[in-house]
Length: 469
Image (cartoon, rainbow, N blue to C red; front, side, top):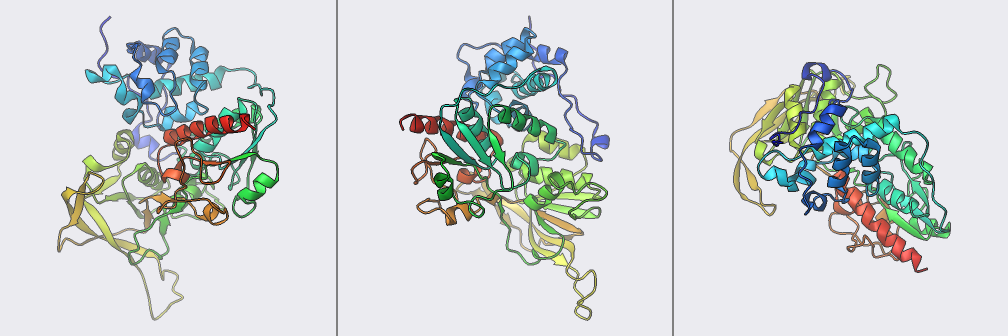
């Protein structure tokens, strides 16, 4: 049978419809499309796709089950190595990982591995009966700090081995960046809640509203009887450009903007937390978080949304799919531009004026690409005399995040690097015995799947460590 050269298209909401709602954009494969896409897999003996997956999912094996219409069997294969299949099928950058290694991709488009993973996970969630069964306890207790992808993965892997795991989450809802950072239209919160519920069925305790470093310290966790601690607290400390006007009302970090919308439901008619709605919005940055913020602003009622990014489209770090969706929805990309000042209304004669201190615009300069910098990308250089203003009512800064220093500052002997990331060895072990770390708390902001991979590595190391005690 001749190979179909292109992936089967993912059904989506029409751009003119989805730009005004928070329902999921991608609608998922039907059973018929999933089987047809699975048929494109060559079932290579060398299995290069598996090597490209940070959690080493048995990809050819699960796809073979899809070919056979054994969707539950496919799910069980994925679940052997992944604790969050429905999440990964939606937000993992497969195009630079497993799919980039696909043999079929050397001549045609690679197999839609991520789309098939999503289909399998959704099928399981819709059809599976009964609950996950907690294994017999091995008598050991482990604390996990943070319920993001690295923490949930570490907790799940340890729970399956019989460890009693407690996950401590600073916010009131488990899921970390999966619930506060990624919008509903990309990752429905019910999906995350389902994955968390499965971990609870395995015996994992989730303790919300506990800020490790303030409510409890890591040393106190050991005093409470936990024999090892995994720190997966993420990178929630936003960065700013330190340009004039960043303290004006209407300037947000992307973390704050998305948390207000995603977790605190600011998009509702009667929100408990305020957020800027309507007007014109500029989002500074070019990563996935910037795309999420821009598309969220549009759905909140913005009349015009700009992406302001200092390099060209070729250097834009966001996933191609997210960029294309943003373009289809009408986001205005202002590339090779960089902000130098945020403009605001000030009335010195009447400091109590209700508009005093609000954003009225953003001043930018045009850039051109010069010689490559340390990252290998061509360095943006300012074009003299190229200043121009954009009329905006809000500015969202999405130029990266770093780990919060709270845990470092309250844990003796915990070494960090110059960027605030916790220093670990290849097994995730920190400079403190029994303390492991992974995900964004180590690397700074990265992908969900890389954080999951770090959680798996640490879980294996913790198991080896405690099995010797």
